[in-house]
Amino acid sequence: MPEGLTVVAPVRAGAEERLRGALRPIGDDIRGTRLQGAGPRPHIDFCGSRNLHFARFALLDDPERGPGRTRLLFSSNYDGDLDLHLRELVAATSDLDAVWGCCEGFTGAARFGDFIRAHQCQAEAFYIAFRGESAARIREYAALRRRSQSLLDEAAGSRTPVRAILADVFSKEASSGAALPVPESPLERVLIRLRRALPLGADVVRAIVRCGFMNTFLGARKVTASLDRYLLLRWFNRLTRNPPPRSAPIHSSAALDTCAVQAPVTPGDEFPSPRHETPPSFREDVVAQNQLTVVTVVRPGQTARVRAVMAAIDAYARRLSPDGSLVGVSTIHFVRWVLLDEGRRLVLLSDYDGSWEAYIDEFAETILSGLDAIWETSFGYPPDGARDVPAFKQFLRNHQVPAEIFYSAYPDETVLNILGDRAFARACAGAAGGRTDTLPHQL
Image 1 (cartoon, helix red, strand yellow):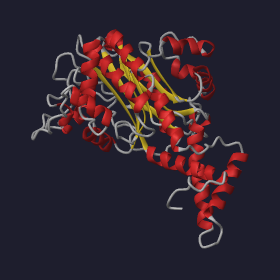
Image 2 (cartoon, rainbow, N blue to C red):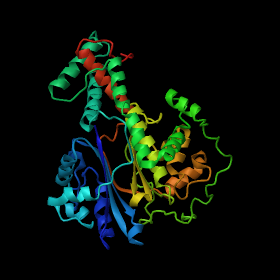
Image 3 (spheres, helix red, strand yellow):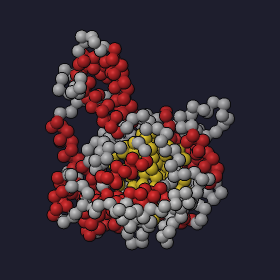
Image 4 (cartoon, rainbow, N blue to C red):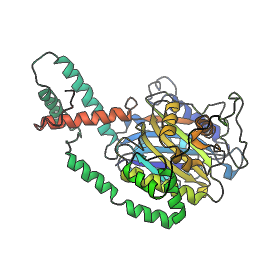
């Protein structure tokens, strides 16, 4: 199962511009195609890893240490154990000191693992679109589909059975050592879902112990209010008299002047400091996926409520969500929420498909009450919540932090692509085993 790593390390005073100067060229040339002749500069060979799904670097404000201070955020999703991931990261970085040496407490590659663990932040909620799939296997699915499609195109009009072509392709892939799947029966899929769901009761007990009964109950109730399409949650909503959110307001509370420099209007709120006029949308729409990093300030006394909401989301994501879908949204590869500064700040880290606008619109149409549950305890949240979509989008943009580096191991593969590729690979596996019931209907 893929794992997630979130590291937040304080940057040394006066090293902010040097660090940004090291990170941005790496992000501009993520695959290192322009290194030759560019002169000596740091590079991180993310592409050399078979175990990495996504990675990003961003610079966050550090208000706890005073104005102008920053901290380095590193986020990754990887396969295997943390030690292997860290060894890969060290080996992939040409000049470790140019990046991590700008952070307080870094003493060199020999103690890199200790440094990372000292600044590691645990996720309060974590969704993985494909829990049983490695980055290598996802790439192999896509490669199998491309090669099979080429052979099928060549065989069009011939008398060669489709099953024979797919079986031959799969056999060649399997003999080359590719870690491709075996077909699953409907009963096997049901048993897998049941095994995942069994610990749900223990999750609820842990949330109550940690956050209190009322916070856990109210948090879960808020999250499920707009999820009546699921039978179990519909029953919960009926039993707790939990109506769906009200309809969207006619007018928006979003500011009309979108050209003015945005600044907090609520005491206690914080906007990211300007980074040389870098917009929040920096590094969006470069590949099929995008990244979203949002930092909000939690109101005093609301940390337990936020943790309870996160516990409900985490339990659903781990125990109930089907592959490739979070509450009906099929554009998210990974998303997690992290609390910083003893619960005073909430960070969202998302890797998703398509445009920013479409991503936010899809969530606003699908789970209004869940969005309200997550952010209504943060300063600056719109009075009408996510139902006021323009104001909600402005809230996210105001608190969004641009990524200096964003890497995807499969930049052309959307969640829906991966679902289709995996189904095709399983069909090929079934054909190789003599089963015709696993072939896609269109073949």
